[in-house]
Length: 174
Image 1 (cartoon, rainbow, N blue to C red):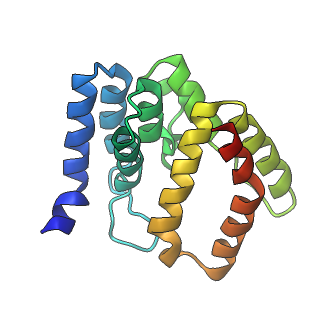
Image 2 (tube, one colour):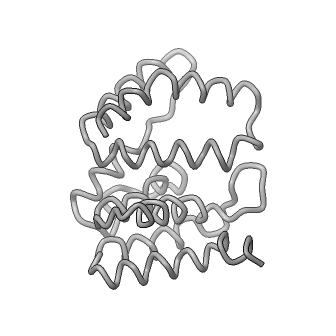
């Protein structure tokens, strides 16, 4: 019963929306509904878990740490909609600061021959924005704890190497 109550995305949505209403987080209220619609039908890799669980989990964690910043919570909700849902930055129903966070958190597709160059630029840009660095660190923690069982050994190794290479800089920013 506890598992169903705590990890039910509908309960998480309700918590985020009630908290957002109480704290007048207008971007967050728009972002929750937009993210739910954008991620409709998506599942976490190799699982039956609805994808929306991931952005809601980030938002809930931020709120539980008393991070009551509209742009941060809204960007938690929207951080994957450009990469994973084919949405456009200009179409997001949020303010420019939130859009900038989402832009920073959206990584260009890489190929084996340009991966390091793309990731270097991506993480350097995130390091220049403490809010983006915070969201990216929360994103990595959530991904490692909720997706690692669904990844190949090669992908896990690549994530570990990427974490070792780039995340000390992000943590330093925080």
